[in-house]
Image 1 (tube, rainbow, N blue to C red):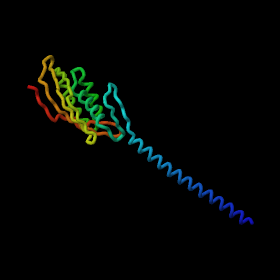
Image 2 (image 1 turned 120 degrees about the horizontal axis):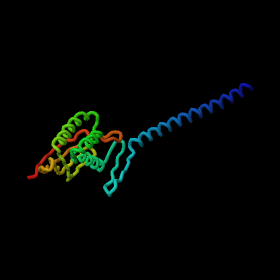
Image 3 (image 1 turned 30 degrees about the horizontal axis):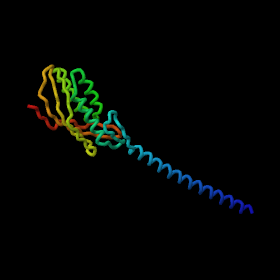
Image 4 (image 1 turned 60 degrees about the vertical axis):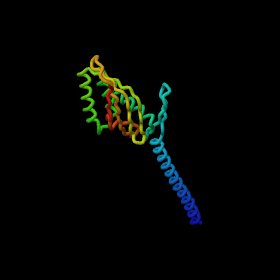
Amino acid sequence: MDFKIYQHRLTALSGRFNLMVTLVIGLLITNILMGSLAYYAHFHQRIEITPFFGQPRYANSENSVDSQYLALMSENFIYLRLNTTPETVKFNHKRLLSFVGSAQHKVFNEQLEKESKLIIQEAISSHFDIESIHPNAHKLSCEISGVLKRAVGGRELKDEHITYNLQFRYNQGALQITQFTKSEVRYDA
């Protein structure tokens, strides 16, 4: 009789243990699924931002940006580099450098230092009027064309029609400039 009671208790304990193992495995699978869903949502969640003044909205996530965002940021970078006076050039270039990746930082810094020294020594003021912006979100690039108006002291220089190409890197929600080059320059007659 004791043996049957012992066997019954052992069977009940075994059933509880099997239930516990099943629950633990189920919870483990659920945790893995929830963790992968949270990971996916973190890196693929798109945020849509609508600027003031009725400009087109743009969207970005941790891994991608759209063309509107690239156009807006490229416009800001062009203005930081080209809308300068001897008083504002250092501040503008410092802000621009904060968006340059560490691999290109030294080259950009040297180029901007040369430009800022020339602007300060020669008392050059410049203003860039954008005519067209062509962003490419797939290549993370933007082509901006416009007219650069410069003055040395109080003397106006010839207007330059310039096209700039900007190349970007976008990772973990941070946009970095990798290339900022002139591709075409034409002077007004």
